[in-house]
Amino acid sequence: AQKVTQAQTEISVVEKEDVTLDCVYETRDTTYYLFWYKQPPSGELVFLIRRNSFDEQNEISGRYSWNFQKSTSSFNFTITASQVVDSAVYFCAHTDTGRRALTFGSGTRLQVQP
Amino acid sequence: DTEVTQTPKHLVMGMTNKKSLKCEQHMGHRAMYWYKQKAKKPPELMFVYSYEKLSINESVPSRFSPECPNSSLLNLHLHALQPEDSALYLCASSRRASDFGNTEAFFGQGTRLTVV
Image 1 (cartoon, rainbow over the protein chains, first blue to last red):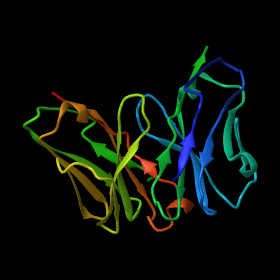
Image 2 (cartoon, each protein chain N blue to C red):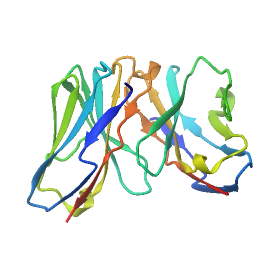
Image 3 (cartoon, rainbow over the protein chains, first blue to last red):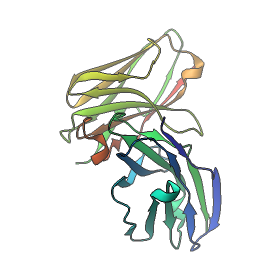
């Protein structure tokens, strides 16, 4: 069965600090997809990134970067120079070709203090 | 337009009421989803519609009745709910369910439902 673990329940940092959110997944499938979503207090889930199991390239988008490592079954997310607007709950999610819907990790609440 | 619109944003209903949640998207997506999210928990899948047909029902109680009248619209009819059904109900859409992993799902802001 698929499983996504986000061991960090809550992280608090001061603005401009770097912060890494951890995500560990379990799957028996060779083809699978990993996602990160951000959920601000307003409630909607905002898509951040998608990765498939054949693409281990790391990605950088502005202050955001993602490190996908199949050897450790991890897909970690780093925010560089955090800002107050980054405060939200961040979910790592997983799917495979059979499931056809997202299975979410438990989420990490990030609080960035000014 | 990459928007999924959900109405109402907030809903308070009694246990004997019948109400409906509405979700609309105009992105041409052919897969639509209902998720339920309790406070401080991740979203949990309830239903998946693919090409207006129900393709996944995650053993949801029959007091929740989904409906997909057309490719842009998804409803969730509520009847005889319990207080423990109070949650944020999120709608999402994606291009197709069949290649779900190759595309992202877009979520609405949700309906915060309180059952009294």
